[in-house]
Length: 351
Image (cartoon, rainbow, N blue to C red; front, side, top):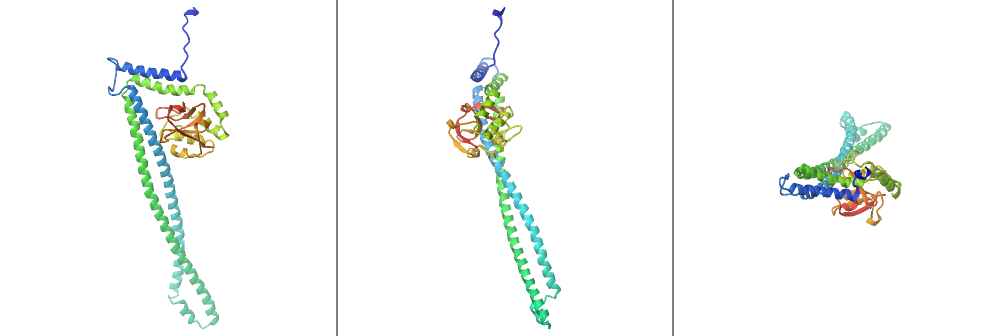
């Protein structure tokens, strides 16, 4: 009986999983090309669809990082504008107080009949009264001059604040327009990618998703052992905390512009990971690469930031053994991947 028992099947992992998925995708393409098979777009093979979708996802990520940068600048400009407006309002209140004080002095002079103080004193027949009133009038004149000078200075300062606020408002409009442009680009690229995927038959689409999932599954094998090893190999406690956060984010969805806690884009994930370790990183890939010490590929240690493509448009968190945790693209959750799967552009050690 034992001789006829069917051998137990083992799940594919690692390169075997990726190879199996690739063969499945190629098989689906061949099946679609056979006479009578479903083939939604005769112009593109499934492999060509995949290549174009990957390119569109990359272009969308470039636009996403530009969107993130524009959003960061727009937010900072809006805060600066609010601060200028608040300061102008406070100074206007102080100006009104000064004007009221000046008005009181003017009213007091009016009540005396508008006679020049020197003439009023000259009419006094009492020398003691003359000297006492002369001293008082001098003090009034000094106070009035001080109040006038204060009002003039405050008016000038408020005018300057309002001019600065006007400039900030114009800058905010420019940055909001830039933000809108990048948002439109991202959405258009993702919509184009979705339209291409919709041209695949159900069999081809399943093969595509299997190919993409296989990369994630291969990287997730023996996750607990990998996590412990990465924590031990991290150069310091903060790097270990950042790595631990990244492991905790595995499986969460990619959403462009997201910084957590339920979804991330690539730079949003690395920013959140290091924020959990008490380190503030800038928002975009092209600013994060300058947020620490640049290191060579041979110096990589868990917690380092690894960057990809010539435009530095993608980033992941290195976890050791040639692997990283990153947020790949829409439809692909945060996962472990080899750093060789994209063109390497550089690395930075944050702390």
